[in-house]
Length: 559
Image (tube, rainbow, N blue to C red):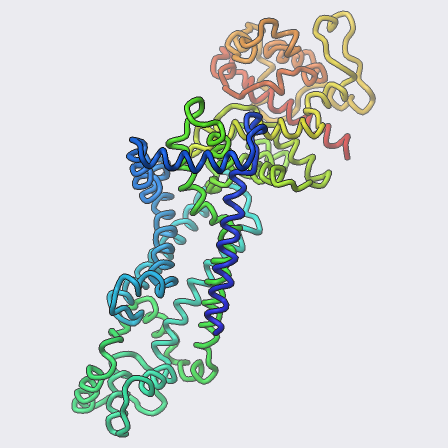
């Protein structure tokens, strides 16, 4: 009764959660082109698109993506073979365990007429799949401990998912081990299936199970004579062999049984086996119910996005399907952290400990906005800071292993912030520096600072890289190769001070003027200026130290 109620409850929550999460793909409007497309139109367009794809040449593309990217995860193997191996072990092993063991009544029993969980190859495969998961977790832990690169922040959702997975695996191994050594479990089996009444026969069968199957008995002890074992074997083959293979095939559980054998009788009397059964299945049911709301939802969302992204193309497909694909990107993220590792401004996190600076964390903020959640003023400030410190360098999009267009998402997050009436930090900076900066009257009327802003005056005293401005001799190479400068017909009017002029201001100890330039906020961190400087000035590093100082000052002023 407990099993049936818990199973149907968890399955119901899982299905409802899955439906709710997938409906977000048709409700969330990420870009401006999606604003005029209704949910009903997107659902109908998706249905038409699926039918049209199945009955077209694109079905070959879908099958290829399903085999190479969904099952074999080629996209991950191209990035990092060790990480691919860990992911394949955890994902593949756990899914096989779920299908063969967790859903055995629905899947395995339907495929195999003579299925019993205590028979081979099912017993061996269950432990093999469990070992595969454990190996994957071990590889992941090794990579996390050995890697020094910035990684996504672990959240409560991450911890809950890991704890549930750990409880499922550990309780499953212990449950199998206690079953092997349990005398009460053995007695239940004999009473139900053996049909023996003769005390000598019962003793012989019990002796055989103690000797060959690892049962710890309070009645009989080793060693046993050959005749008793021979008789016990015969009775076993008549009564038990059809549904019980030797427990040694379940090598993980048998290993656990070996460890707990000295206390087996005490555990049996305390009915620990029954407690472990409840713990294991509750964890499994809780994990199933929680899956759509956890980080493991990408088990479904990532394959779905890979398949849709392979056939839905901008300018070719129905705009409704493009809007749906764009919304799917928010759930497709696997939280691998590649975008954070390659982010050009991730280093700012060391000075400004705001997780929303990191691309992998900003995604959660965007989803919260689209879901209609109104963040607190403090939370909103952090989201805005993380959003506008981004330089639109495109690196996060370039390195995303599954092809999420993160650059597109960030631009629309900025659009959402603007719709809510929140100005960009560069506007704050100009106001804090005494008004709009205008280069045309710079020489005639230098920018006046309010008392609170005089802390910006003087030399740039920060990192060793940023202090290299002192060797600049004004050759203008940095300005000449800058793609931002090149993109404007009159760059001085738009940007204020240009890169070489910012270096000149710093040499004149006019840091406050350098911070007034829009160039700090428009820099795309392509590093072309820094790579081509004949003096080795770390131009990009200088610009970002100035930008971080401006942000730091603005935060201090707002506090």
